[in-house]
Image 1 (cartoon, rainbow, N blue to C red):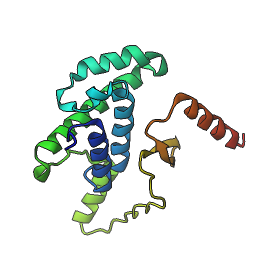
Image 2: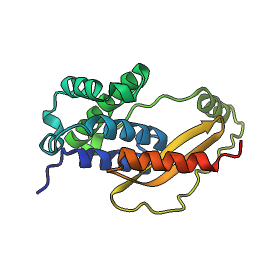
Image 3: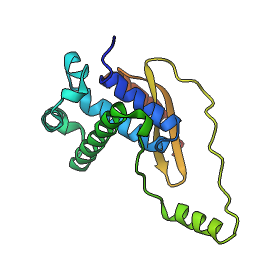
Image 4: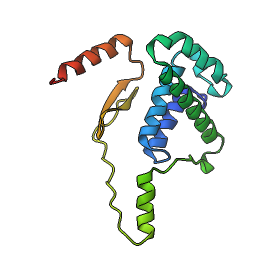
Amino acid sequence: MANEYSLDNLLQFLEHAGDRGLMPVATAQALAVATRNVLGILADDEKADLSQLDLDAVIKRFTNKRARDFNPASIKEYSRRVRRAVDLFLGWREDPAHFTIKTRATGAARRKDKGIANGEFAIREAPAEQTAEETPGTYRSAFPVRPGLVVTLIDIPNDLTRAEAERLADFIKMLAVK
């Protein structure tokens, strides 16, 4: 039986949490991206049981190994996201039936809820349907290009290399019109 506390299980949990509405999809994706980056430095045996990890030590290793690749604010945010992802995952593993995630309501959501309470109508956009199935061994990520425009990449290999990422970046640069 596979260890139920592995990195793969954590990433599957985040995908499940986003798909099932336990957390916003964008939040689940952001947690997954940070988790892949930070925990990607681990040896295979370390990835097998996240419940035994010393996250402080892992984050320090990540910072020492990859500090050139990220600015300090990104490293701090990745650290926060990985801690949250692991905490949520371990909580879910402990008691899936009673698992909930505390989320904050945005001002717009509070105004809509308040409007409904006052007998007014609130218009909500239906979530966009997924148009493509992900290939096993890949993940999906969203990137905000500018306000109101988010580009979604699908079928990103879980083991994407730096060289492949650079080729992809070069391809995207080729698409620019200005």
